[in-house]
Amino acid sequence: MNNMQELEEVMTKPSERLIEDIKQLNGDIMILGIGGKMGPSMAKLAKRAIDAGNLSKRVIGVSRFSSGTLRAELEEAGIETISADLLKEEDLQRLPDAENMIYMAGHKFGTTGNEPYTWAMNTYLPGRVAERFPNARHVVFSTGNVYPLVPLAQGGCDETHPVHPVGEYAQSCLGRERVYSYFSRKNGTPVTLFRLNYAIDMKYGVLLEIAKQVYQEKPVDVRMGHVNVIWQGDANEYALRSLLLSDSPPAVLNITGPETVSIRWLAQQFSARFNKPVTFVGEEQPTALLNNSSKAHHLFGYPSVSLNTMIGWTADWIKGDGQTIDKPTHFQERQGAF
Image 1 (tube, rainbow, N blue to C red):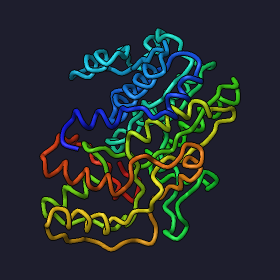
Image 2 (cartoon, helix red, strand yellow; image 1 turned 60 degrees about the vertical axis):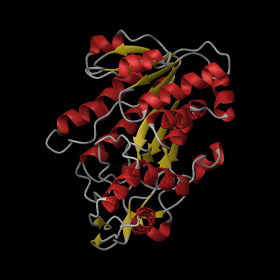
Image 3 (cartoon, helix red, strand yellow; image 1 turned 90 degrees about the horizontal axis):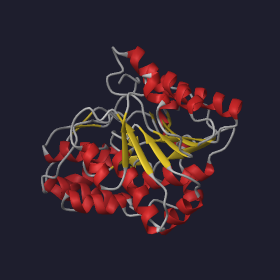
Image 4 (cartoon, one colour; image 1 turned 30 degrees about the vertical axis):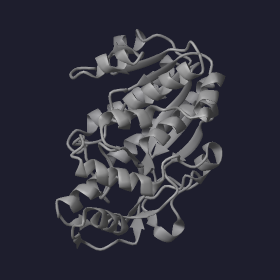
């Protein structure tokens, strides 16, 4: 993995399973909040699957598109774009109807000190979208943060585990789920609640953050001693395929990789690859934010990109001075303050 072109090719190449599932979907796909870290690659993956299946569906991306070149990049890839502020009722109402909705709009970092906006984006807006598109299938991005920190021996929270969000960001995300669930029941709207943590690619994510600390010979904080990670391309595929699982009341899916990964072990892996020493601060706590995704793996198969492959790609990316996004995950946060 040496450059952005190779990264884009790997992340947006559709599997045969995705192509077959896209064939079963009636109608177009609209992605709300396409301007985030995952939206652009998901849209391109969907478009490539549609083209590979010789289908005529549209992929429509909605975002503010207030700056940068993303809009032109998406349109060059064959994705229709709409500039809209979804909190403005007139912008929401003028969106075209689509049979399949991927809801990715939301707010996380900067929640502390801006709690009202976080709740408006994460809880109020989902209800408005659910009312606007009652007859569409919806995949609603949520987060594993709706679960509590649990003992390592538990193996992570599966979908039956009681939710217990810590902090206002996580509480507002549970609010998103509850509001969508209400309208799903009220209107018979098919919904999948997509509880994700943590997607990574070469430009951002837990692996990149740990690798950079090791490469720069900075100490690694191990108080949140374990995490789950999944390749962004696999998470995007699961999201698109989850449209077929949408139901009323909503289906619930945890989305992450199969391993419970030690932060200390990850740092040591990068230390060996960089031939650099590694130091640690803090001590592993007995609990962590861990997500059991065995249900999704049963439905979709195991992720196509393994943990060791992700580690190797990340190390090569840093050694090659690859492009990164300065958006830390704050996976170390134990009090829910984002």
